[in-house]
Amino acid sequence: MEDWEIAKTVTLQPIEDVAAKLGIPETTLEKYGRFKAKLVLADTYDPEKRGRLIMVTAMSPTPAGEGKTLTTIGLADSLNRLGKRTVGALREPSLGPVFGMKGGATGGGRAQVMPREEINLHFTGDIHAVTAAHNLLAAMVDNRLHFDGACGLLDSRRVTWKRVMDMDDRVLREIVVGIGGPLRGLARESGMDITAASEVMAVLCLSRDLAELKQRLGSILIGYSPDNQPVFARQIQAQGAMTALLRDAVKPNLVQTLEGTPVLIHGGPFANIAHGTNSVIATRLALQTADFVVTETGFGSDLGAEKFFDIVVRTGHIPPPDACVLVATVRALKFHGGVKKDELTKENLDALTQGFVNLQKHIENLKTFGIPFVVAVNRFSADTDREVSQVRELCAAEGVRVAESRIWAEGSSGGEELAGAVLAALEEDEHRFDYLYPPDSPLLDKIETVARSIYGAAAVAMEGKTRRKITRLQNSDCGGLPVCIAKTQYSLSDDAELLGRPRDFTLIVTDVALSSGAGFVVVYCGDIMTMPGLPKSPAAERIDIGDDGEIIGLS
Image (cartoon, rainbow, N blue to C red):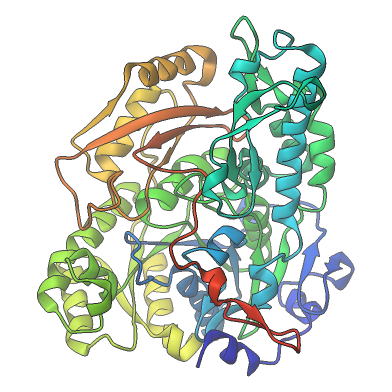
């Protein structure tokens, strides 16, 4: 059965009943229909009375798909099945991937969050609100240039704030605005990013409450003055109106899985560009209302997990995870071992063993941070028993826990082995969380530490102008910020074609930018794009709507 067909067989619970499982009263719900709601709750987070946090990451993703979101959803269901009060915490899907290459982000098979079409499309409007707040700031920047001229508060040649939209559109990466005469504003070069890469999205997800959100928005760098001094959003009085647009978006959203497990879905920064984690507001709320919280980070341990540890946890708003799950698949291992996508259903133990080096590096990465973890082998229907056994043996040789997951086909019952392994890791394994680098380490050292320790690079290279930009940031009280490295998700390196475990490569840093509101320095590597393009055959070509209003083809 297709995902949408499975979803049609399930009768969803009223959202009030889902909230009641977490002790959340109906009076605190702002309902969006019968099955989704925003939560209006005061922040009563108490670190002494919090639940236990489980973070799900993965090996390097492949075109075959690994099922990280599915595993997150299914693990929450499985823990509930074992009598543990559990809630999931996920990011909101971006329309870019939904209509592009990746498709939707609501899980699959017997592990889905509902209502899937609404979550994958407009949901409660949070991403649209982020787009509006971001573009309001852009409009106010250009309005200031129009009335002040090229040499007012802002130097028109040094404006850094672009516009965004929640869609893949490569032709908008570089644009010219303000052409057509004085009434159209001041002509200048600019560009557009996807909303998931917006600093406003990162700010929303890293702020503890509305007051911090407003403060962070005011600290966003928008450009430089004619004497090359930084100019921030607060200097053009933009933060108040931006916060007003985000007043409702700051409230987390409550939905449910096919099995009725509560899930908070809030915020949606990409992990290959931004920090890749749902909001700290949602995670804090989840930790106060459940005994176990299962969250996910974007892509592999080299991206989402590293940023979760070194950016999100550093805010002090949430604790380090109590345990992690590292998702792997037989298909992905064979792909990293050199097997073509259309041949992944054939048994190939040799390729699996060769591709294991990729998972091996992700295992090493999680060991670096000192968090107990379990390798989850997400089983596909074409996987053979011999292949799954081979993965178990290879993981055992690394001295790590491993569990087979049949969540896609069987739902929570298929995740009992994984849930049991996670519970055992929580109780029996050592927890000694370590950051990757100290906050006072120079920015250049932070970049090199991530490159060498997490990616396995032999060296880091950049042009002189990029190195000088980093030096200026270091000397302008930004040296204490963490780095958010933007690179391809498909490889441990910055080259998407280097599969497996690349060695002796040089990480190429192409640019850096200060996200002063979010509180990190973005480091761009390789050919990473902040505005993706649609693939040759985008998912949008397969999405349609019937005469009865039912959406079809949404993966």
